[in-house]
Image (cartoon, rainbow, N blue to C red; front, side, top):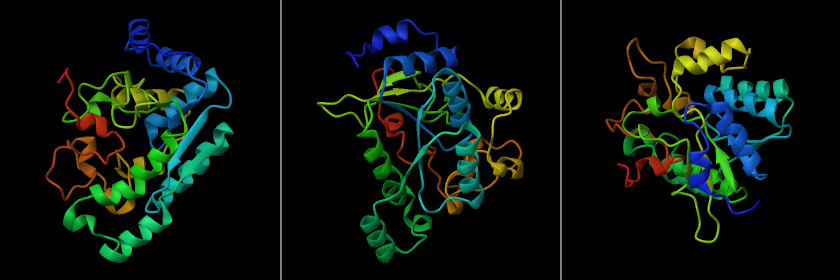
Length: 244
C-alpha cells in the first residue's frame, strides 16, 4: 500500500454514500478487516462480498456471548462462505481476573476492566495485524459518544508511532431504519435476539431487551448511570478532539 492520504479520501467521498466509502476503503488497503458483531456489520459484509471476494472479517468471542450470537456468527460464515477470524481473550489474564474477582464483578465495579480483558486486548492483537479496519458504528447509536463520528479517520486509540491505523465507519450517517431496510431488501442474516426485543447486543450478562421508547443502547450495562455506553473498542469516541 502506498501512503494513504486521509484528507483526499474524505474530500473524494460523500459521507452519505456508504457503499462508495466501503468500496474505496477496500481499494485503498489490501490488509483491511471488517469488525463483525451486529446487524450493521453484516450489512457491511454483504456490501463487501459483492464488491471484493476474500474480504477479511473478524469477531471477538468474549466467552460470555448469548447462544444465539454464536449461532449467528456461524450463520454468517456459511451464508457468505467466508472465513471469520475469532479472537479470544488471553487465557492467563482471564483466568487471573476471574479467580480474583469472580464471574460477575462488573455489577459491582463497572464493566471497563472485564471488557478490557475480554474485548479490548483481543482487538488490539487483531488490529496490530492490519493497516485499516471497518466498523458498523452509527452516529445515532450513542448521542453522548458517537455524534461526531467521522466516516474515515486515523484511529487515535490504536495507532502506533511507526504504524498508523485507519478506521472507516461507512454507516456513520445511517439510522437503525436504514440498516433494517437494507437487511430486509437483500435478505441479510441477523441475530435472532433482535426478534426478542434486543437492539444493541453484547455479552449475555450485560445485555437485555429494551422497553418501548428507550434508546437502543439502554439495554447495555443498564445498572450503570454513565451516559458513555462504550466498552473500549471505540475508545477514540471518548477522547476529546479539536472538532468537539
